[in-house]
Length: 188
Image 1 (tube, rainbow, N blue to C red):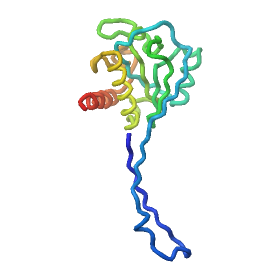
Image 2: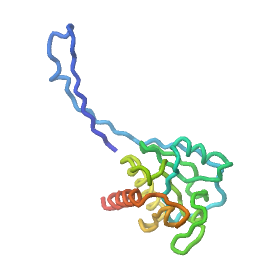
Image 3: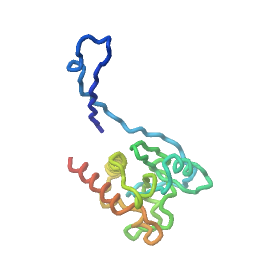
Image 4: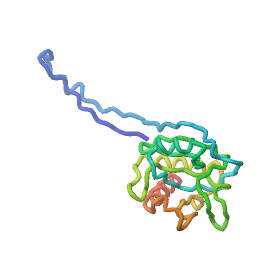
C-alpha cells in the first residue's frame, strides 16, 4: 500500500535571513508494508488441505485475541488475526486444523475446521466498520490462499453462514467489502 503524505516545511526564526520555504516544500512518498507476526497456537489438532476460507471477527481487541488464541485453555484458534492497522498475526499453519468454526457446515459438508482456513479481524463487525487497512490485508491474504490452493471466491464464506443461528460474524457489510476487494484484485 502506498500512502502519499505531503509535508509543508518552513523555517522560522531570527537566524534565517532568507525565505527557504519554496526550496524546502516537498512531497514525500512512504511505502508501508504490513507486518506479519508468527506465533504458534497449541489449539489445533490434525492436518487439513485448505478448500475454502471462513471470515470471522474476534469480538475482542487484537492483542487480547491473539493472547487468547495462544492460551490452551481457550480451545480457540484461527489461522490469522488482523489488526485495525492491517498488521496481522499468523497463529496456525495452513495445513493445521485450527479451532475456529465449531459446529458448522458449508455446501453440505460438516466440520468446516477440517477443510477451511479461518481469518479474523479484531472487534465486532456488527458494531463497527472495517478499516481500509483491514479490508486490504484480509483480501490479499484470502487471494493468496485462493491462488495457492486453487479455489475460487465462491469458497470464501462467513462464520454466520456456516453456523447459522449460532454465530453472527462477520457482518454483511464487512463480508461485502472484503469480497468486493478480492474481486477487484482478481480483475487486475
